[in-house]
Image 1 (cartoon, rainbow over the protein chains, first blue to last red):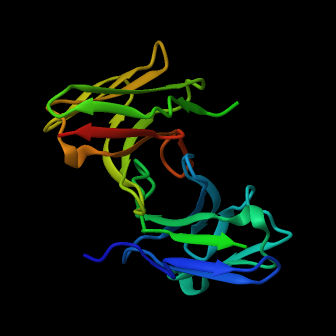
Image 2: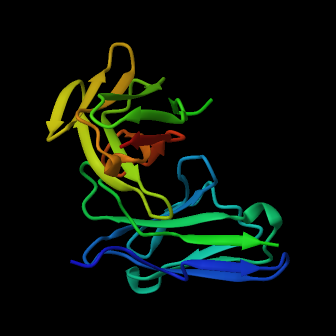
Length: 114
Length: 111
């Protein structure tokens, strides 16, 4: 079974430029999460989807960040415009039924804003 | 105040040592306690989880939860160089509720 797929793995952009990250969750997983992980820190939730619906986006900085999950499968996270402080690893995770909430993570996209 | 606190280390031990990793939390509503392992430049992978109080063992790994003191631990016996990674504790109320992560403890096992 394929795991969570993310692309690109690495991205370097100049500040004020837009950037987008893509995630393909594990097949059959209805819940999808985007996390932000700063160096030396644990992941912090940005947004959670149940199928196509964003059920928790309270931590998403909506002035510059947006996300979508069309058709309830793949998801895209966008930053426009990027700031120096956005340099971090962006992780995508997915889980199946709520239950224990076992989340499976992708390898992440390491973003560097110069 | 963060939902869960974790000593960031780093922790360095010789091969074969017993490792103890710990976290504390403040809200008694949390029911599930998880440990993730994260290798450098990889995503976190779930090692094991415990529901409510008690111990759970999986090979060389033992997870322990003491809800009365709001203290969670992961023990690694006979540590190996391949155990060198960052270990993240995570807590959740379960169901559709979110997961809250500690800062992670970076472990190095020296051959």
